[in-house]
Image (cartoon, rainbow, N blue to C red; front, side):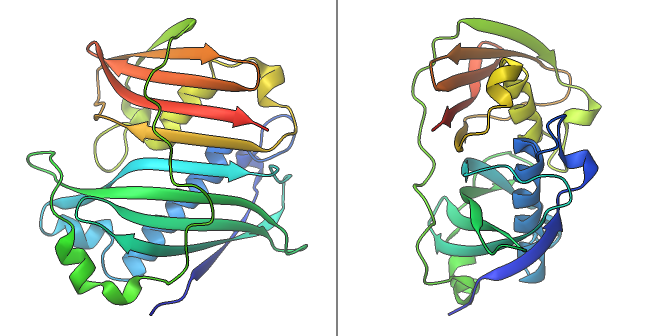
Length: 242
């Protein structure tokens, strides 16, 4: 049985907003970067999968931050895989302040594998068989991602998908979606110092040149989002401040 892997980061100036605290997208980017580095090191990263015209895609993600660390904070991201299913694999994370040893964040992500030619999901059973020794016998650090079944937007904005939105899978990058959502919110909401949880669920891919509609339903201590393309929901998410 494997053990958790640990990777070190620092909150750099490009990672903060004008409050000098790390933004949700910058911390989320570190989490997803860790997933890629760890998968590569264990032999089932995107580079290895591309040889068979396959790739990993994020299906669902839940992140929680008790607080957002300030500029130049050193922190450690621990990651581990807790299970492989036929369709989804679960990879977990905790974020810990290097100086104080205090855990300030956690995440649970669920990944699918797609065929890059058909863009359809493929059976993950072979990964579980070939890399069973990568599973760590530790439960996820928080609830798995929650589904958001209905959003009734009170505000909408349009976004045309451009070059800078696209990642190595040639679809919109996860953090770009999150940035689109956050840009719909009042600055006072975004800069409050409160624990926050974000759940995001991907329903379909969005590609270069499409025009997306970003819908936001703002509630008292939370916000729901739906991003649609060509009249169909592509992403749903929720952000809750505690």
